[in-house]
Length: 182
Ligand SMILES: Cc1cc2nc3c(=O)[nH]c(=O)nc-3n(C[C@H](O)[C@H](O)[C@H](O)COP(=O)(O)O)c2cc1C
Image 1 (cartoon, rainbow, N blue to C red):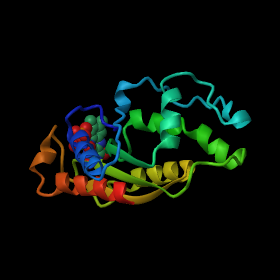
Image 2: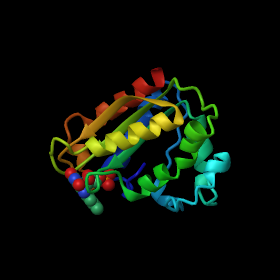
Image 3: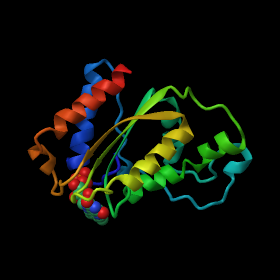
């Protein structure tokens, strides 16, 4: 969950998606990135040696979760046409996993794992989600996850305003359900 706003639009959408997944028997965990201490990538490139980041912080607990989950949902509001900086820091720190795959040629988890992207933005621009979709797809490719589903909601701004949207919350529930079924 890339938003710093608890009970905000992303949080509510992700909550519904997780309920949908649970309705299919999935065990779920929501990671609120804003509550973690994750330094941005410093390009030390220790990961080129052995696939491990040399920075010690809360990413230590995140790497195994990213690699062990059967499915992943990335959820974020759009900030300046991108993901939030909290979430982008986490993604950039996955450069060590990129090094494992593309430099060290290590085996990754089963690439049949499925992933979905949930995003919300205040405006209605046609390209509102384009940059973020590319980032999430590249993350998924790096960690062996297929981008199979998305829920992109325009025109939602105030905290909790998503509740007034006619379909978004039930769409999120269904996304979670589908993901757990696959
Ligand atoms: C720093 C910042 C940058 C934002 N940039 C954009 C933007 O580029 N495009 C957009 O449509 N909305 C933008 N927004 C609005 C948020 O995407 C919108 O309020 C969203 O509903 C917040 O979701 P949340 O409640 O999950 O945090 C921005 C908001 C903030 C705080």
